[in-house]
Amino acid sequence: MIFESSYEDWYILEHTRLVDSDNYRFRVIYSWNKDLLKIVENHHEIKIIK
Image 1 (cartoon, rainbow, N blue to C red):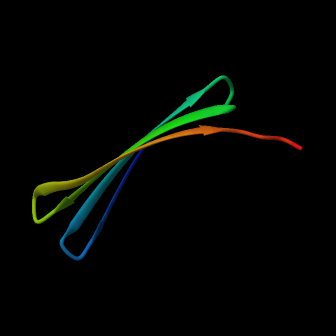
Image 2: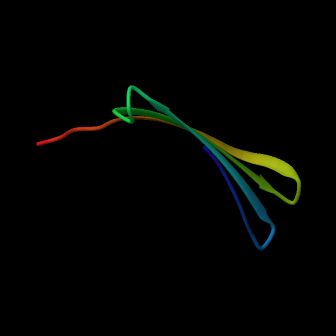
């Protein structure tokens, strides 16, 4: 899945990859400010069911 958003001078692009029926997720988020890449985030998530 790819999500895009913008706010004031910021443009955000988020790419989410679902693995093993959504038990694991990998997300990368890129953030540009005034057309310059400023922030890159990587997230690894594991679903925990109690």
